[in-house]
Image (cartoon, rainbow, N blue to C red; front, side, top):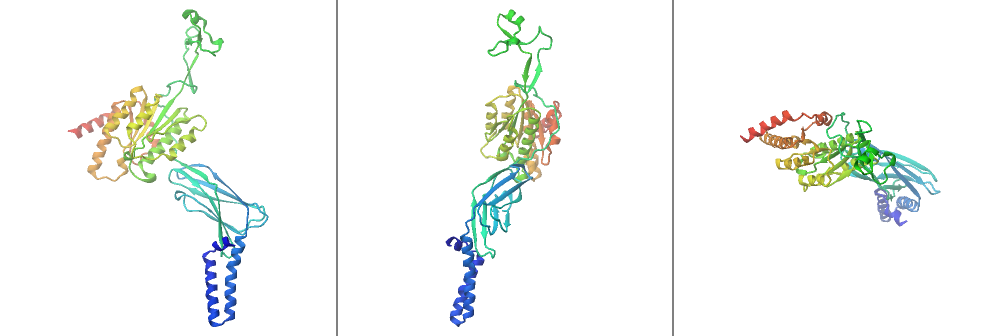
Length: 432
């Protein structure tokens, strides 16, 4: 009963207040009929509190997300299944699922009645325009009487997680440099092309099949040699994401950083489908290797939570890449760079890796005066020239640039020569 009285709604409390006022008036005026009205007004909310407070329903709830991972701007369907585990039918139930602000307002669904051991399902949709991981729930069930005089809440502690990943756009097929680098089992090419006598060999290792012993090479070297008919090769790629806060401009889904994150996800998924062994490195220190199984989900989940950081510098990113020199193809997505930062990145070419840079002119995301625009363009061109001279393939990205249209430039070996000359003239003219 106490719980029911604490759950009186504004309407129920108003009834009690009206009953008290009517009782006082009846005492002053001596009107017995008014006293009967006061008793009726007081009995209704008290009976409602007794009814709701003594209701001990056993409810079970199950929530499912379809799907658990969605791209930015897409919708997910949330299904709630509520079952009455008791023998008594329920009254009116108001379901309210708690959601973070980014997923919209809290959905509210009314269930008029659930019979004994009866179940009912309701569904609603959520949509997020911002990357991240969001907790859906817990579910709050509000039980009320038919007149809305008393209301009690019960919460189910279970929650589910919705992951909103960057938008992935399809990219055209382009033959990229550094396709065959390192060793592995993903690709193979023959190295014994001149017949049995010229077969490539190596020293015998414990566990090798004795049927692969090459006796002519064994007799010539005096050591047991085995035939190496095929040498496995694999394609390796490293995607670098610049997370420096001062390297990007804009705010929200239209910021330059969001363009870079979406581009990193699109390039990573494209290379994964092409059979590359992929590594994702961010300025925040994230270093993710995509495995055969859950590689796609692991990469997208990591990119769903990546954020800009004021403390991150290009030096940190370069150090993380150099901790494990995989060689192969390096594709970087960078915000605005100074010439000193570009010189640090130029050192990544030391191990013979093929480097491609998508250099965002983040100042294009701002409305700058003419003088400031000219200064920003000059700094952008100077940084690009440093990378070009170091052997990087530089692809400039302006506000509104579409990655599918820019992607073919990553495979053009001769691209950048005309740009290099034009930038050299620009920088030289600025110096004069």
